[in-house]
Length: 305
Image (cartoon, rainbow, N blue to C red; front, side, top):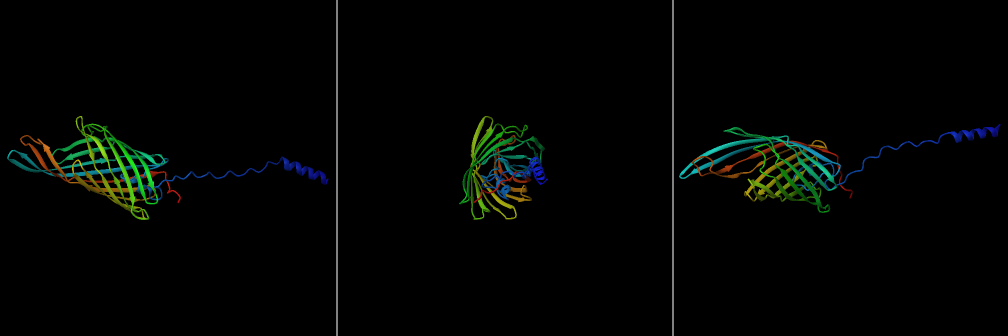
């Protein structure tokens, strides 16, 4: 009986299925690394003059309302007759949808989609309304010196004449823009971004002009996710310097609010502005502001030290 019991137990043990190991939990997706990653990467990649890019697997969408008030004082000149006059225009646009899409570990493409724009005059009411031109850009982060906090890149932009009559450019515009970012402290929270855009754009008819308008953007980022920056831009073709205050605040790692305010004083010199006058000369004082938000999908981290 004992031998029979042992044999029966052996048969049962052989017939019993072997235990199946529990399936392991789904492995987390691989982490993305880039020199501009981390908890404040949206702030780092928001400034247009920054070489930082959204890497493959991530990107952002940005929506903005913008307005420009442009008062002007002019002097109409005709022979010995001179008449002073003032004017005022207001322009606004929304929602200015901007898509940033990472395509490789060090490059992104940017698409500015059609947006509604309108220009109003104090004298003529609505001057023009419709959609503005589209833009397509490619940005490449080409140089990284992590030890010294230096980043270098290039931004290529194509502006397509796709807008409504009165707003559409007379032809396409092309820009080549080297970018440089230099950190000024060990925490990398203070620095300056430099941009050197060279633009080939239509002037009128079939004529085209070249312009060079470098930018210097000193900035500060707080530990709490606040960005303060001053955009200083000088256009050599018009000899005009503009100043713009740029600020942003992270609400979460993926979402931020941003706003800008600034302007430039520009000279006016118009040939034959009205019948009987040879030209008008004076100064315009455009001031622009924007208010919008950015939402980032995906994330990346700083490379391990």
